[in-house]
Length: 180
Image (tube, rainbow, N blue to C red):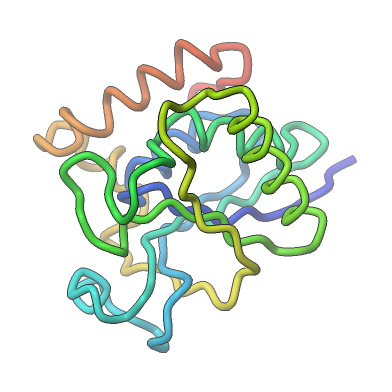
């Protein structure tokens, strides 16, 4: 039986998250987009202008009978740095913030629980600054941002930023991975 759910996550550039979640068993669809801001239907250029309040996010549709929301978040916290405010590596700005936009109270509780566990276990040297909030609205990004890594894997950004995240995911979550 299929139990379809969604997760909406911001962990820096949406291309990075999309590439990883495309290889996670149980994931049905990933849409790169924008959430958490105050501008209706923003463009990539507007979001990059740092005035919309939106973060680059992925909306992950998954079969909760195969992969749980907690699994989704475990991958999320392993492939980005949740301790840096408004940045991931060389990508700087509020659009690159670490964020979990929840779809219901259960997701909100799970997200808070995982952050507490990671904090209590001192998994990260610095405090986790991941924003956790109910999803206001999600706006899909322009078509050229969808499936980006698969279409442009030889570009320098993909090679130097996304590929290492994929390698880390493949090593840590080999049993949960599917080749697509």
